[in-house]
Every structure is written in structure tokens, then in C-alpha cells.
Image (cartoon, rainbow, N blue to C red; front, side):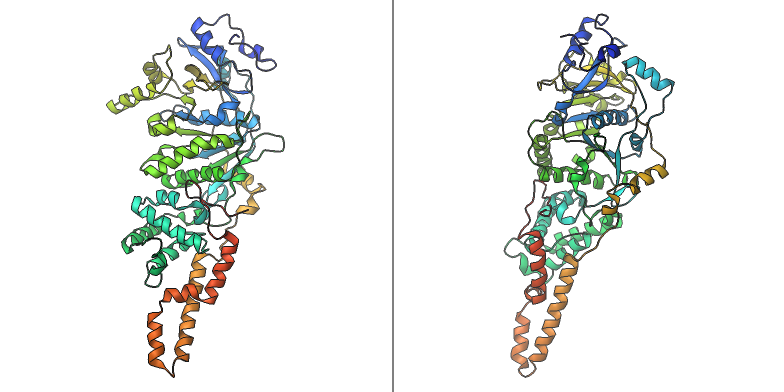
Length: 533
């Protein structure tokens, strides 16, 4: 099989013949000449020359084996995401993109041709034409443009919330006890005030007895948790937790014409809260993992999820958190989801996770300091053996060029290929604010998620229960007037916690919520949960 064997009608016209290619280039190109559907990344670079006849591609069936897009700032990572997302959509695969800088929204609009675009297209043998792709735009909690994306505190779970609140291991375990108690009592934690109410109740004189059978919660630890929640709210995070909770199944939709829907999470308004949005992205993945059925090896993924600024997820992560990430990445492949981590350097990703990323697009790295030089050497060691001097190549790549290796259709690593990437067909920049707002308000999901709902949950139920208990105590005091000494003694022995949890009003409320949630919520690897549908 030659490097130029056609894989679709008319491909030979686009890529030329193999006769003019140097032998090493033919060998590399042959390894990328796949027989099934594949995404075109660009053309091989060899000896400083771009060879449009040697196409560098990724098999569609291998995109659920995950990947990494890395490189220094300004080297073209965002355009690479855009290029891959466009082709996935064209193949009917749904895509999720996090737009941290606000420049990905242009994927919804046709690109603007020009001499630079046409020149790049000629260099790589691309037939370029402008095209926009079907998009949905989301915003965290309604901050900034986009359909509000929210989760309940119950669904988010203790492990991810501990990460975003920056709790230590002991505090994380204590928060887990709080969630366990709330789950078992049918106290639904919708927003942060619900969580604060339950924590405060459990360390009060009235509620402390409730934790005796499952372990204590110290006042000091509770104080740290409460202060962390308060600080989090002061950063404007209250809007991210609430209802209606986002259903991650909405990320798997296709457009009426069969193209995959590109879901773009607009994050510029919260880019100063990286811990929040990186953890929220992990919740989306964990929720997908929790809900999706096993699918086995598919000919194409159901969804490809681009995890931007990936280093923020791993910074300061506990061992348990990293283990959960590793297990999720390893197992979600069989559910038809591919993950691409996007960051500046491969060293930002823990080794156990990096080992599972079979597709690599490495843009230029800088080596201005001894630390940079060490990171460069470490990056080179993560690639298969190749005829290139990768240390020299990686520091000399231009914008829109990258070192690529992918998994072949048989699952074996393809040889390293220095690649000049194709030009995206959509707009390389943001769309106008008016166009973005119109797209958001015209979405069929806007009516479902736009308005926040604040229904009765743990905060209201605990308040109602406490009020009922106080009323019951007052009635008991009035009835005890003929025998004041004996009745007052009994009242002193009865804790207010018992009154709260034992009152008829509270039992009725807890029973109604418990019926809705189930006796106890089953939680996933990350402690996330979802109501039974």
C-alpha cells in the first residue's frame, strides 16, 4: 500500500502522487494511509519542505482512545481544536469545547478566506471552503453569554466540591460525612445555602448526636468548611449550583442535517476562577460516565470532549482525586467518549493519565530556562522513536505546525510526523456579541435552563423542622404547667435534635423527599450523583 492510496472519492486529485516523496517520508505517510474514515490534520513536513502528497490523519475509530494537544502560548492549539472539532461535526460526532479565552465561538460561522488561508491550503493540499458548524453556547451559572449550566450540590458530590473549595484530606472526609448524612435523611442539597445549613446543624448542640453512629465532625473542621463555602459564594459562585440541573445527555445531540452538535462552554467571564471551571468540566465528564451505557468499540465516538487548561485540574489534587480521574479516563472509552486534554506541556498531565492518551498533537515548546530544557527532554521521551531530532524540531516549529503521533486502526502507534496543519473552515475568532446572544436565545434548550428555580430543599426543610420542634416544645411547656418540675426535667433531657428529627412535620418532609431520591443516593467514582430518571 502506498502513502497515496485513496480513502475516499477524488482523494488522489487532492494529494497528488507518492513518486516525488523522499523514502523516509513515504514510510511515514504510508503509516497514516488509513482505509476507514479519518480526520485530516495536515501535510508532512520533511527537511523544511511541506509535502502535500503525504497526508497526516487520525482514524475516527481511534478518537475514543483519547489524546493530548499541547504547546506554548501562541503556537496554534486553539486552531487545532477548531480544526478537529469541525471534522468531527461533519462526521456526525458531537463535540464539547471549553472556550476559555472567548475565541472559539467563531466555529459557528463561516471563515473568511484570504491570501494567508489560501496559501496554507495550497501548502497542505487542502481544498478550502468557508463553512460554519451547528453550535450550542453555554455559560457557567448564567455568568456571561450562554445557556446557564448548573449542577446541584447533591449531584456535584463531596470529592469534586472538596477540590473546588481547596479542602485538605481530613476536611474532604468530613465533607463526605455531611453528604452521607444528607443523602440518608433525604435532605437534598440544591445550592450552597443548603450545604451550609446542614453543616451548621450537624455541629450544633441539637444535631451533633446525629453523627455519633458514623463518625464525628469537629467544630474546627466544620468552621473551615463553612468559611470556604462563604468565600466561594463571595466569588460569585452561588449561581453555579442550583436548578434546573443540566442534563449531560444534551451534549450528545446532532443537528437536523446529521452533523454533530458542537457544545461551546463560554468561560471568559470566569477565567479568573480556574479552579471552579476545571472542576466543573470534570463533573461533566463524571456525570457522563455515570449515565452512559457500555458501548464497546464503536466505529466512531458518540462525543469528543476537549478539556482545556488541563493543568488546573491536576494542580494540588489529592491522591484519591487523581485515582478517580485516571479510572474515569480509562473506563469512559468503552462508553463512546473520547477526551483530549489541552495544556502547555505534557508534564502538566500525571503519568498514569498521559499513558492513556494515544493521539498526540504537540505544538512548539520553548526552552528559555533550565526548567524548560528539562521539560523539553521529558516531552521527547514520551514520543515513539523517530528519524527526527525532536528536541530541535519542537523548539523550531512555526505557528500552526506540530509533531503528531496517533493510533493506527489496529491500535498501534503511528510514527512521529512533523506536520503543517490545515486551516479551519470556520471563523478563526469570536462571533459578534449580538450573533452569540441570538444563537443562545434561539436554542431549544434556552427555555428549559434559562430561569433558575429555588424549590424547597435542605435549608427550608431544616428551618421548617426546627420551627415545628420549637412549637411542639412550647405546647409541651403549656401542657406541663400542672406538673412543672417533672415536665421541665423531661424537656431538659430531650435534645432539640430529637425534636427536630422526630417531629411529625419533619418526618413528613423527609419522607416525601426520601421517596423522590430513594432511601440513599448511589454515588459514582467522584461521589457524583444523579436523580433516578
